[in-house]
Length: 251
Image 1 (cartoon, rainbow, N blue to C red):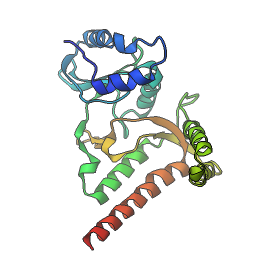
Image 2: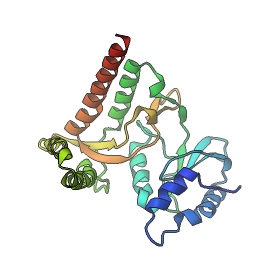
Image 3: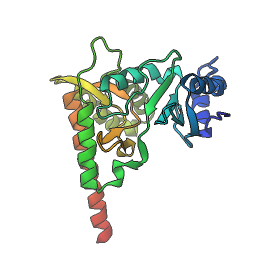
Image 4: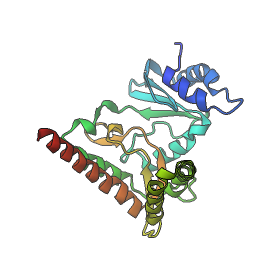
């Protein structure tokens, strides 16, 4: 089979690829080798797909539906492997292959991306998504290499400071956001693993026994107070805003 990377992936990685990075050029051959080594049967490449990895729908030699995911080093696929192995299917997609000789090749269980919690009534969707996030909240493994929420948001904070310097009108809003960010770290009651992408469209149906799980994740280590503010208050606020808009529209 010819593995042609989706145009979305080509555009996204082509714009950000460091000089000398030939991952995209090698991707078709890498995919063929990964399929052959695992004796997989290819169904199709997921299109339009994501912006950081190639996703191929496959079946294992035993006929089990699975997903083969290939990502460049800068997407930190090995850290994703470590996070998924640590979660072991509790609230996140299950890793079918604990290790791989080829860097950036992950074999995952196949969830049902066409059935997300977003398809449920809103109150039910919030409960299911929040429950799934709670299952992800576990102690990080010893000597982990996961990025913390503080480290991750520091990159965005630097960009926001630069933007505020160039646009004085935005400075008060930026300062308010940065103040809120700093307040998150004042209390550190406990830490745990969490996903950095908690949109309900990414929480998909799994088997009846395992229930809802996050299928597309970005892992971080966070304080519990930060996690509560983000997964609880943020969703409730957005829900109230949507209800208010509906009431205004009805009036």
